[in-house]
Structures are given as structure tokens and as C-alpha cells.
Image 1 (tube, one colour):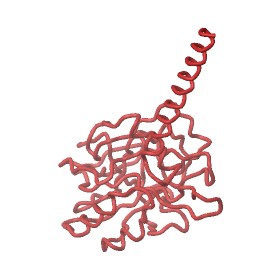
Image 2 (cartoon, rainbow, N blue to C red; image 1 turned 180 degrees about the vertical axis):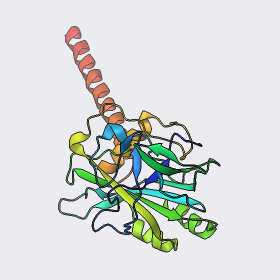
Image 3 (tube, helix red, strand yellow; image 1 turned 60 degrees about the horizontal axis):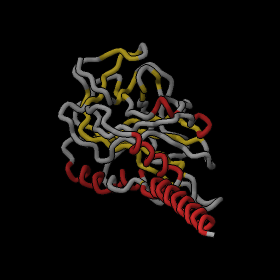
Image 4 (cartoon, rainbow, N blue to C red; image 1 turned 120 degrees about the vertical axis):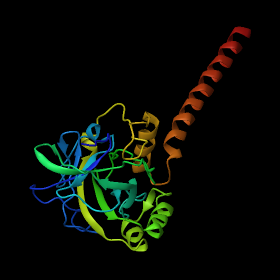
Amino acid sequence: MRSSPSLIITLAGVVSAFTPVGFQPASTNNLTVAFGNTLAINGVNLPKAETQTAPTIGTSQPLVGTYTLMMVDPDIPPQIAGGATSELLHWLQPGLVSANTSTTIGGMNVYELINPTNVSAIATYIGPAPPNKSPTTHRYTQLLLNTTGNGAALSTLSKAGATRSNFNAVDVVKNAGLDVLFGNYFNVSAATNTTVSATGSGTSASGGNGGSTATAAAGAGTEGNSTGLAQSTAGVGAKGAGSGAILAGLGAMAAAVILL
């Protein structure tokens, strides 16, 4: 059996796993996602700590062709209270194919979707990090797209995936001329967001966990503020600079007292 640290699996014989109610593009074909041996299906609420590396996902029967996995968060809080939520792209990974043989995960017989040729992610995986701001529960939604031999669709996805914030999954899928074959979502709430250090996965679906704490921190900043990644880290630098200025001022005052 071929395996990969970052996979996607669809399981048979489980209760319905599909896209959230009201979410578009929708699917009622069940894509089951797992973090290790923990199933992340049917809107189950998971702690942030369990979701910081790219999950496993696949199908009850082997698929023919090459597929792309999209994962979005449609619950980014508005900048102004009462405004509409927006989407953030968490993962966009092409080049996925079904394994030749099935494997058992959590008691389920599945055909894993793997990345045997190490196709680079259009957008590498960043783990959930919902801020303590309404809505505090975010629905992380996975969509499986058939991109077999479709260079034009992959080009469209690549252009769209260059910008994570204010993403629009329904427009991107429509513009690429694709349909969602399978869907799923799981929830992460700010109340379960208790990890001290979160590590994001900076690799494609077949790669190792090559990300860093800074990557995940950037992702967390983006979920809390849709204006961009740099803002969350810039604030830390600004605070440090302010502390330095205060210390310098105190030193100058002390020198003045001595002279007096």
C-alpha cells in the first residue's frame, strides 16, 4: 500500500458527510476527512490542535484520473460588525490520484488519494485558527474536483489560488468549468483554540510536514483579519519597538537625575 503523510480519503458506510447547509458550490457525495485516526466529517467540532497538519481524504471506490482538493473557510468575520463573512482559502492541492489498493482507517476500507508525483500545492495547507470574534465556530469545507487532463481549469485554479483572502469558491469552480464531485466539512471553534504553538504544513499532499510555527501563525492572523498575512506579524514588531522606546526614555531620565 502506498501511503503519504498528507492524504485525502473518502470512506464508505458512514453517515452523510457533505458541504454545509447553504454553502455553494454544494455536494451531497460524501468525502470523509481524517486527522490521524480521528474522523473529521459531518460538521464534527474538533480542537485546533488536531487540525494543524494536512488531513487524509479518499473514496470508497478507486477513482480514475487526477483530482484537485480545495479547502476553504467561509466564516471569516467581517471587518465591520453586522457585515457579511468572507472566505479564506486554506488548501488547494492538485495532482491527487487513487491508490491502487485499499487500506483500513478507523475501521473503514478506503482508497486513499495520494500525490505520487509530488505535484506542488497551488496553496499549501494552513491549519484552522478561528479568532474569538463572531462567528466563533468556523466550517472548514473540503471540495474534490476532477481536473484530469484539464490544463485550462488548473490554470484558472492557479491564478485564483494566488490570493487566499476574499476567496470565492463558487466563482472559482464555475470559472474553471468544474463540478464538485465530493464534499465535506468539519468545525473548529474559538473555544477549542487552545494550542500554544501551531505548526502549519508547508508541503503538497505527499510531502512531509515542512512548515513552521510562523506559517501557522500567519494563517491564524489571516482568519482574524482579512486584510492580509503581514499585519499579524507586523503588530509584534511594533510592540517590541514601542517597548524599546520606553526603556530608552527611562534611561535618559535617569541620566538627567544624576546630572542634577
